Image (tube, rainbow, N blue to C red; front, side, top):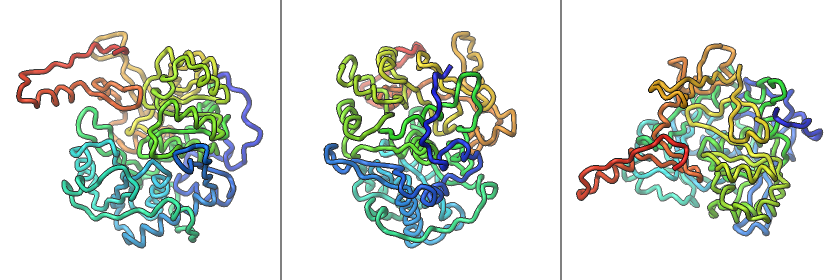
Length: 455
């Protein structure tokens, strides 16, 4: 059983399960919340690198207005699109990623988030394959885009500062399409990690983005409830997940916009680490936390750090497996939830496992379409994860088939050569071998794998 108690009794109707819909356009939710709960803080971020200096709250009214401000700014600078042209953005890890994403979707472009972690081969590949002709960057970005532009010249624009977007009142930008009219419209371009080859762009459609709300509506199974029910026990959650990544977008939409859990971000100039996150827990007033496993595995047995987790309803480890030792230790203080998202699939619906089963995923048996099939190479201990589209009624819950309509099944088989590090980064032995072989003094390389879960 999920060991889930009754929902909070202070949840505003705008965030209650009865208000959720599997066919709602996510980019219109900010406007709806600006009307329904104008003063509710959707997001919060640290004022400076020093967390004692406090935090800036972003209300639903402020966020909705800022998304509209971004839309008007895009029209003023780019004009109206003709056919969902691609606009790339790279900046500091702040909520401008969300503001430009929602603004661009409203206007009719599609947003490309190219990862600052890409190398000089990765960026041009993603931009070229997305047919991107406009590159938007923030002046405070840590990524120098000049080498990228030398490889692939494009029109460039400097994004407004976050405070400018937050404090410039505008009228709502009009958007009249229904969900049925817009669900197959391309809206977002994310890309694979590039861990098995150069990063490849994956085009999301509005219907795929809507799965972040739809997965609230999967039915409970016995005493197991959807994970979103557990998420909504918290009122305020810290997250260190990057906003250019699926995990960061998932957190922002699911927690803040759909569940009403205020998301708190640290200073973008401070790389997340255990000591910094401990101070976030102390000063930000949060009662849930999410980030890379390295953050939560690092403290080990430091009692004062772990004591701070007693205030947390849950700890979400995302991007890689949390070590068995760290997870079992944290479980004595708080609930541990593993999170699995992929650029190709968004977030398949699942149920919350029992507290002691934190290492496992409980894929929804009727609404995920997930099947674990025996390894075709004959190893009976290994199974391959497939998502199968066998029921048209599952469309709202299976985002992968918006990105890849055919064939009617999707396999995760291309992940075998990837090692997920505890900080969420990826290591790929085949690419490592290629890099070593490029050295003239190296005759041959071999990077064998035991296919083991320990390295």
